[in-house]
Length: 55
Picture 1 (cartoon, rainbow, N blue to C red):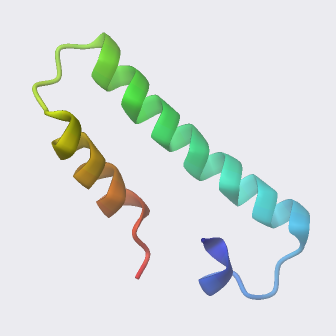
Picture 2: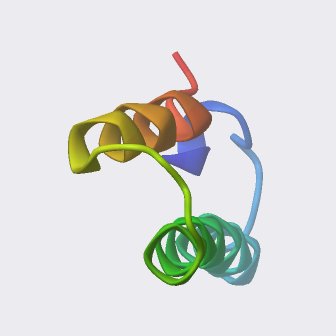
């Protein structure tokens, strides 16, 4: 995912970038499940897609 934007990075930097995105996905899902957020599963999926889409 990150290789298109960070072309000259080492594996550790790539791993940290992956952790960053994974943490964001986890937190969005966690908040959606534990708080009264009025979004359908499809809406949350589209939201996360847009957050992660780097094209």
